[in-house]
Length: 573
Image (cartoon, rainbow, N blue to C red; front, top):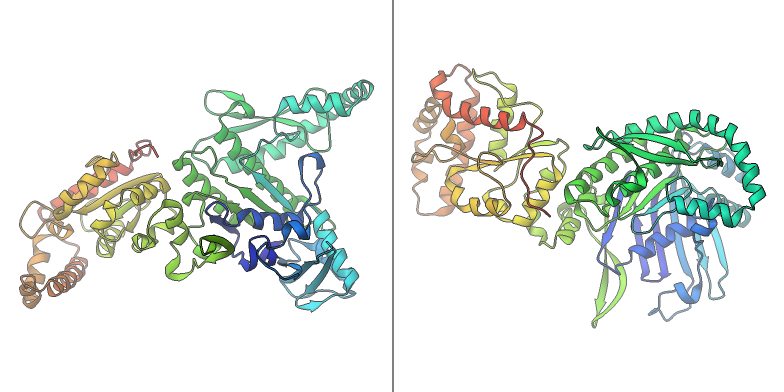
């Protein structure tokens, strides 16, 4: 199952708005009181029945007096419309249930189910349901809504709340349940029966342990998982304690730091959802969604960047929709900006009114990142290639021409060592970009291993900003060019025969470099850079002496990336 959209009218700050959920990994962000909690509550209304532990979960329903839009004076009903996407592969149980009530098979793939809730002033809620835009009768609509609610199809994890669920540690809570809920005689009988059951549970735990190990293996911090059964107690919900092991120690999960605990609990929610998708029988299989509130909690920015990548990858690899609320730029969908919902409030006469969606498509892709980093959106215009990068080793270069040089040197044999092929070369859009310390710091946190290059002629301009980020010359960044007139850029590394050939053929462009008009100078420089690159690519038999400057740079960069344990030195965020 996937949520395609949620539309709301006259519900709290959601006066009239539609939220599209695009793709497998979607994020909800915005400032405090922007309306994020209202949207999460709407998910509760549709998906939460109270759960297997009703004392730990609230059941949400519409109460007109509390939930209507306060500044809306009309007595219009609260109207919420959910659009869901089902498939015969992932959700056969729900489709079979719907087919039973509508009296015919559903052939269309995927199937679109639309559910509309209307609550009037007397708190009476009615349901309308459409199957591929075809309305169903009143009773069928109600049955479908109840089925979805009772199927417990949303795994919700709130990182900011204490979690004391039975099989997640919290040993005090488990003992408390024994003493209050069970009598002494019942505890004795249960513990006797548990001795045999625990043996079977150990066997059942093996597959869960292997699957969780596989997911944790995506993190750079390597842990192995061990499940340990709780002494003398067995239940349908897998009562295992969880230990995490690194190279030296094995420690119960609840004794690790808050960031490690929180991250592991979130991965277990994803694992549980995937187990339902992959192990349930066709008669009971409905793929749930996973909703995570503030997964960045307790994590250092570098760990946030890694965990955000892991969650996005899991959503795609497992085919499970993951919806995240976040205040961290590292948790946003960096591959598809339209999957990032950025909420704000309309302000009239100094008062906050309805929730609105900020456009995050096209040229506005950077809006959520700018919001979280406190920057102007225009400062992101040159950084879009970085946000779609997937490699852990990244060479940042000034522009597209520099990128083409280094990518050519990854795949061509010109008689010197080539650039390592496991390095992704990404342009950052010019020297001025490096002066934005906050933005550069965010980018450094996105990647495991980063090295920065820039033209020698701008070294004095950018060195101050890089120093404030505690980045060191040669270790973290390197100017390109040689200290000679006209050679203080990447072209200064080229064989002299390339420069001579182009300069001899393009005398007009060379003359324009001395023009008093800046536009003409810039245009001539750009054209010459393209022609130097084209001339360089024509040949592969350069004398070694002519390649000595280029050879030094390539060998230095390769050496820097050959030591993965020496990550780029970053300031503490």
